[in-house]
Amino acid sequence: REGDFTYDTRDKNITFTLGDLIIVGNFDLTKINSDGMILPVDIVVDKDGVTLDRNNTTNKNLIKLLRVFQSLDEDSDPTNGIEITQDTKNKLTKPENILDMNTSELKDMVENDVGKTFIKIKKARIHYIEKLRALGIDPELMKFITVWKTENDDDDIMIEADKSNYDYDFTVDWGDGNTETYEDSTIASDNKIIHKYTSKGTYIVKISGDFPHVRINTKQ
Image (cartoon, rainbow, N blue to C red; front, side, top):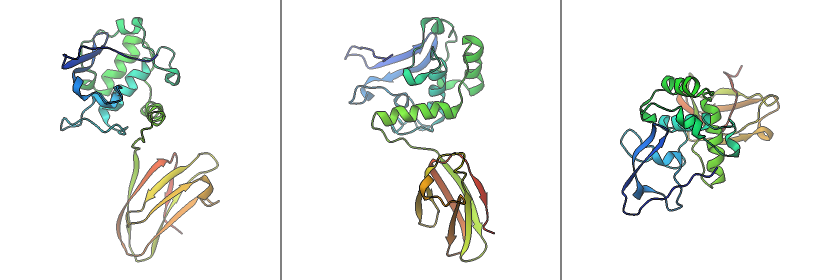
């Protein structure tokens, strides 16, 4: 279940396909990483045509690739490798570029043309993040961002976790120059995480890491 290919060093570009479905056209072979691997992120570019950093896990076109690849896996268990059978490839008869298709079209292709389940974004990202970490790549994680307005100096805001049902390991950028990291053992027993702003104003709070559930309120 390890994918590999060979090419003539005189070649400049290559097109990857699954059946008639185009994964990427005219991939520049000079952009192959020194480790000899091509990760899904390596064949995606941003809106300006620039190749993404390898720790990117949030780009919408990358997410498309991850969801399709993992959805087409023969045993629906990407943790043991992704195997896309010839029978599945034969059902991919639309000669379209996967990156030009919208989510509804991809879902229709996976579920109606192939007969498999189109997996959720979260599941696809979790597996990919685990693979990146196994390769020694520190993944960029989505941030949960909220905006707070305090009316007075020394106002508090409160974010409430739920340790009885979820596991936590995250970092909070409070937007005032202070950053704190929390995990189950450092969150108070009442699940409350409180931060005081010395000056009134509007603050952007960014939470990154494993933060599966939140209750937000002002301190009473």
